[in-house]
Length: 138
Image 1: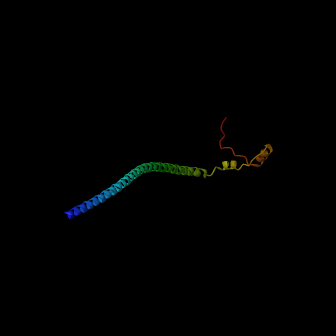
Image 2 (image 1 turned 90 degrees about the horizontal axis):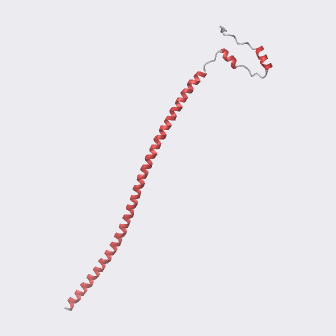
Image 3 (image 1 turned 30 degrees about the vertical axis):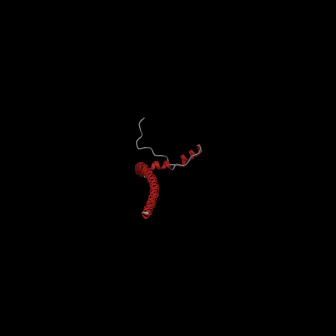
């Protein structure tokens, strides 16, 4: 009987040791679970912040695309205006390249006259303008 009491005592001690070990394992597992839970909550919070950032960036990209389209349209309008002005300038340039009549050319070649004596000298030495073929009636 003493042998069975020793065996029962040993089994009780062994059982208590196993229970103690299981208790500590459960405590460690609970601590690890708390750490993992906090880590996962932190990561979920970071994921939420990143998703908000992505949404804000999408809004900003859309605004930038709208601005880019607006600027492209304005640039196209200005380029068209420049083309129109160049064509208009060509018209004026062609007009200005037309040779002036002889009488008008003579007026353009007239020297600068300073004073009455210089004007008298100019008129004396210069061929006068010819009147038109028909004189208007008074």
